[in-house]
Length: 256
Image (cartoon, rainbow, N blue to C red; front, side, top):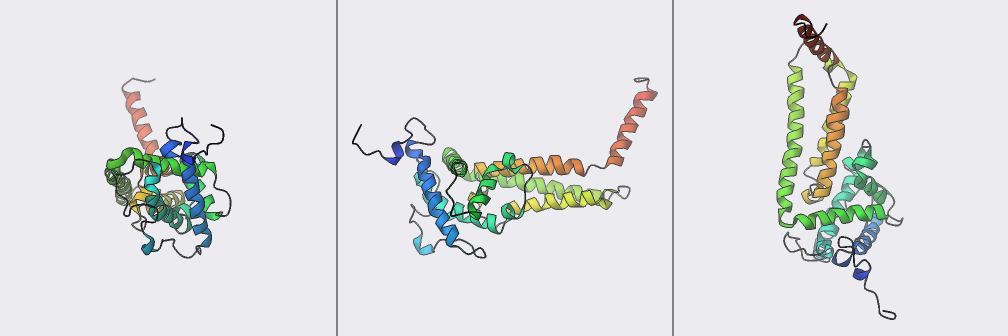
């Protein structure tokens, strides 16, 4: 009604995931606030809030099972996730590596890099939606959050365990020339570098939440399995297999 003040949480009343108790405007305000922290933090240092201020954004430590709305996770976002993302962008893999097709596979990481590099510019809606989606994902899984973290880390570790086993098996094949290939060496190094996502230096809730873990697995699937995988195929071995199959079909009169 005219003359009545409009509360920020009522701007999007019919949008359940970005309005009401889950207002995206609240997420934008927090990102604007943290942008000031980024701007005032030297690039050669890490951003950690003063331990004496723990709980200034909500109950500390943050625990699963008690969040019912987006603002219930303010402490987790401001004291854990954003500081870890800042470190990851300035000193970690997100800031050091150009991901393939990142606008499609890892749009949140791309937006984070721009946010960290330009803290005095307005917070983009793209970043706000990405961060809001991450918080919504945690809110939706609720008490299963730590089980998802456990499974995600196991899948991630299994991927690189398989990679190391493949390299070990290849080193025992004297007839293969793959290890002499510069392309093979380059791609194996790049795939190995992706393991930096799992460094213990990063808090697991900042890396293995549903949205970020899904993004990491998308990068691994595309770059590790498809792009790098195709580049390291041993063409001579593939040719021998093809000729062997062709010869078998030929002598059995299956093809002419």
